[in-house]
Image (cartoon, rainbow, N blue to C red; front, side):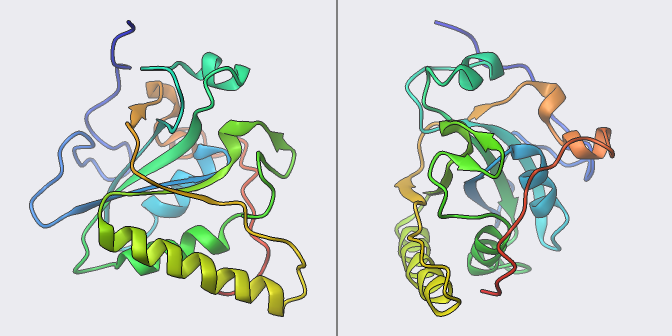
Length: 190
């Protein structure tokens, strides 16, 4: 059995603790392609306390990036968001999720191919599950009305175990401003 991935306790951008859930805050967990750009989308939002990237919904405990990229673990690259629901709602986070990537591509986002790039919403509560399902139905209508002709492939599951990614992945685009970001939405409004 491997050990938990070492990571910095403090968020590189916000200098907040990524390991603890402060009173009054909530978690959200999303997979929307390469986690570098996805994490930046969320840390830039007013009301987001901290973000962390990691792996979820796979079959291996404490996977490494190399294992995940091999396709053998079936993990998804995810962003865990700690947010203040008095400043930003879960619904607002869902809107960012839907409009920031293409949720119709299955195991890929653009030129990034593999199960780690699939679209996923992982819910912590029954309320989050209900909101996620309703938002998926709504965005499918948006796609249909726009003539996209594609079905959403986003998986919606109760939250699986979240494994921190290696420390160099955390807030990667703040540490490497010219780093790769293949994240792109469909140009549709929620």
